[in-house]
Figure (spheres, one colour):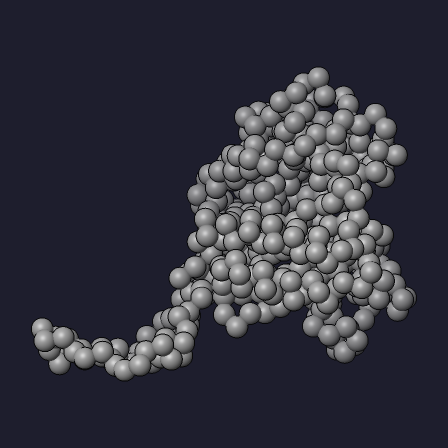
Length: 454
């Protein structure tokens, strides 16, 4: 038996089918008997699934088409420039084979009639926050992945809103389309890994669900690159070992996978079986801060690259100061004329936001990469971010060296005023409180979703 829900009239009913619905394409939706809508969703576990993933469809391009209706039917590409890369493109452009991160010249070859637009990041950020505010109206448990996508934990939807997670999300999808003027795709499952996969199955304006009963069979014939954490290098390694589908990973025990692939082997074991214990973390902390530029002509000269690195470092230092954060690791990014990327990093003694310290580390890394290679892109950034007040500690040894003798106490200072304050050592209970605080703040009461009220 399936539970069905109409996005237009919100009619709910039970549906009896002798086979599960396909996850994508024709037949993935059912017609509503009340209003005739062709996009009603249905699933045997619909009332119980509570982890959602929302992804805006071709976000930058959709915003531009909304603001410029004359571009509605045209292939729109955001980014590019003379020698840049595609930031994103609309679904019309994708029919020509254009994809995000593709070199602009290749995109022009595939789609000569495309309209190239410069990105307007302030506008995109503003609209992205509008969508996020709508998500927060449903649940505070949101984990943003980027400006246009985020996870949501709607375990308490019935208790808070009096309706299931699926009902809340299908209303959110309609609200975003009506008020923001763009479409979003939503995936709903019982964990983050499967929710993210589901959101990509029926784009654009899709709503897909993956339940526990079908997860293993659903994943079996999917390529290994569909798994979170499997990039091009890991995919090549798995393919070299004869593993091309997730189903092949399901046949291998955890000890073999860990022994052969290390820590990622454990993740492959559990993900291939549809298991993911990661919580939806309410964290919006920035992971890194950087600045990069693509050159009009390839550059191999150390003097020219140094000048550009200096300029980029100045931007990064200004951003750090404005945002009141500091970085512990300096990262240098270079892309050669044949589009091969080199990423080098240097961990500093302590977090910094000082421009001279960042530049010294960046130039040290840069000099090691000067080997006659011509580069088309250079970037400087920092990772392992901290609050600014934890950065650039005072050099006590340098201060001691400049001081010839200790200062004599002033006449109005008493021994009590000069006494160093000794903080009491924390008790065992205080230590336990500090170490378990994060766990207790995120621990949730497990509440089983109520069934539909039919």
